[in-house]
Image (cartoon, rainbow, N blue to C red):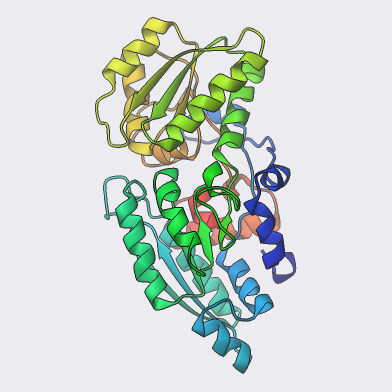
Length: 361
């Protein structure tokens, strides 16, 4: 995005409130066809958000003067454009569930800023998206270095317990997950934590609407990971399903974030006679479930969020025919000049298309 398009710190602060987030991030239908046979993507519906990149952080630092960081103070005094960013997330090889997109997106942003005359110091601290202790340790390590901005809180599982500790400091922080608890006035939010994605409830509310009104499903099964994320989504779906005629939740099947065997859950969906499944899960177990559903003869639409996209991109799913993904910030199907430019640069640098994680960092 250009400097003229970059939101100010005041603009970004609006994203911290649930109602404002809804106003900014309401859904827009977007479709993609691929040559790989991922035919369900023709009826894909995306929840889109404004992708706030590192360039935005740079403009915020300049506009707001000092934000509690030494580099911002020296930059303001000297007139130089300097930025110190620390990211807390994994990259490929750090764990079985790790993806390279966060770090790759950040490195590309650094190159872009440097080309525009910025002096950027970027560091990554490996931090789990499922273990709060790992995320907290990464934040404490970053806090000790006094960066201009910290980027982390990659899932609800770590955001909810670690967010209050981040909010108790003055470290400007961009969160990569959006639980309701993380809004400014929520128990895990604060004035220094900025949300860049739609709230989980908003994404899955759109998924339910698509399942009931577009796909015309009648008996929906819910797959929920055994974390706050899964519980929140299951509650939202069960609360809103009665609003739709002839569309109901008939069963909820759960699993751990690291589950590798879901045959029993697949059989439970089959026995319940579901004609579609909405999944709020982590990428690895989600991929396992999709494969085992197909093995047990449950060939119904399988709807999920960003995790389903990650599972698909990783090659973990053997047959993608029935997948329907609702994702946010998907630049590789965007039509604006900024999206096309970013996608072209990203694919040239890394050899694969960017997803939400690539773009939001």
